Structure formats: C-alpha cells, structure tokens
Image (cartoon, rainbow, N blue to C red; front, side, top):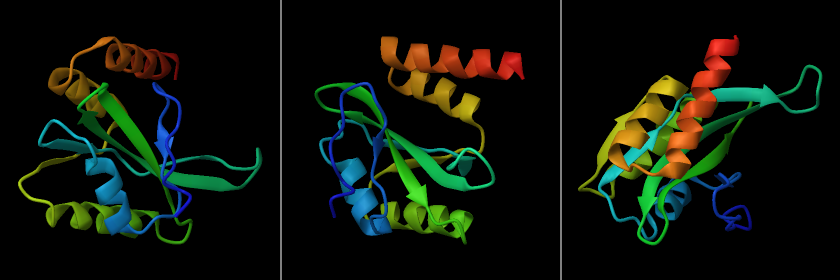
Length: 134
C-alpha cells in the first residue's frame, strides 16, 4: 500500500493502485467537511505517444490545510467502472455529501465555493485559462 503516500502540500496526492475502500479511507482521513467532490474520468499521455494514464481527482477539506485533492490512477481497461467503485466505497462512510461531477471547471468552481482559499482559486483560474486557450 505504498501508493497511499503523502506528497508535498499544494500538490495533488496520487493514491495509485489502492482498492476503492483504501481510497475512501485515505481521502476521509482528517477531513473537516462532510463534502467530497469526485471529478470526471480523465486521461493524459503516459509515454508521450499513444499510451494513456487514466485517473480521477477527488477533493476534500483537511482539518489543518483546508482544500486538498487526491489523484487516483484508474485501470486502462475499465476506468469508468473503477471510478464507480470508488464512489460506492464512500457510501459506507455516511454521513457524507458526495458531489459526482463530470466537468473539471465545474469541479474547481464547486470546490472554491465549498472551501474558499488561495490554492483553489489559483486552480480554478488555471482551469479557466486552459479552457479559454482550447
């Protein structure tokens, strides 16, 4: 379970190939809000050519630092199923408000509303700039 390692503050934490239950437990550790925001299934090039690395970003608010996000690597064979299993794993940890979003910009705006602060504002501005450039 070395994939559940802490990373530098202000950087997304990659929880790697952990099970859905491990992901939920990791994300919920030290939270100070009942809200969890689960972003869309996203891919990025893994090798600079044809390979794809699939992931989902999950946002929460941590007691000490406020807004934080974790990236969960999904299997290339069934990324949407993996994401659904992660959402299902959170249900066992009620009471929670699980926000299931399918758009990165909407996710950033929602997180900024839930947990205002300079980090999420910068992230939202970055996503808006990327959208405007494409």
